[in-house]
Image (cartoon, rainbow, N blue to C red):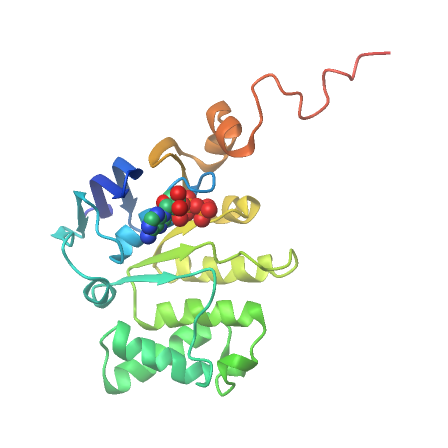
Length: 254
Ligand SMILES: Nc1ncnc2c1ncn2[C@@H]1O[C@H](COP(=O)(O)OP(=O)(O)OP(=O)(O)O)[C@@H](O)[C@H]1O
C-alpha cells in the first residue's frame, strides 16, 4: 500500500480573470494531519472544494489511492471516502443527532441497513455525542453542532476528512474539546486535511503544514518550521524580518 493517499497535480482554478489556484501540486499521505494556513483569499477553501469535488479545476489531475477522480462529482467522492466538515454546521435542524448521522451514513456513505446504523452510532460515539443522540440538532450549542458536523462526516466512513475552519466561532475554552475530537479521528485511522486560522489549534495536532499564498505553496514541512519561516511570518503574520516582535532590541537600552 502506497504512503500516498491523494495526489493533486498541476491544479489551476480561475474565477473569471482571478487565478485562485496556480499549477498547484499537493500530496496527502496516509494517516497524517496536514494543516493548511495562509492569508485571506489565498485559495485554501477553493483547494479543499477541489479535493471534495464541489469545484472543478480548469487544469490538473487528482488521484485518490491510485484512482483518477478528477472528473468525479462530490457525491461519488463522498462514497469513495472523501468527506468535508465546514465552519458553519448545516445539520438537519429538526432531526435528532442520531437521525442526522444516519442520513449521512446512508446518503453520503451509501451504507445500508445495520451497517448504516452501526456507522452512525460509532460516529456519534467518536464525536462524544452519545448523551445527545436523541436531541434535535437545533437544540445543540455551537460546539456540539460542530461535533455533529464531524460526526456526520465520520458516519460516511471517510478515508480522508477535509476540515474547513471548524474552530471558527468557538471560545478559547472550547477549542481543546474540538482538538480532542480531531485527535480521536486521527487515532481512528482517518487522514485529515485541516484549513484553519486558529493557528495554535492547528499547530497542536498537525503532523505537516502548508502555507498557501496567491494560490501557490509558499512553505511546506514540519508545522513549527513552517510557522517560523521568515516568508510565512511576513506573508501570513505581517511580521517583517527586521521587526523586533519580542522587544529584544530595547532590552539592553538604559
Ligand atoms: N465561486 C467563486 N467565484 C468567484 N470568486 C471566488 C469564488 N470562490 C472564491 N472566490 C475568490 O477566490 C479567492 C480565494 O478564495 P478562497 O475562499 O479559496 O480563499 P481562502 O484562502 O479560503 O480565504 P479565507 O481565509 O478568507 O477563507 C478569493 O478572492 C475569493 O473571493
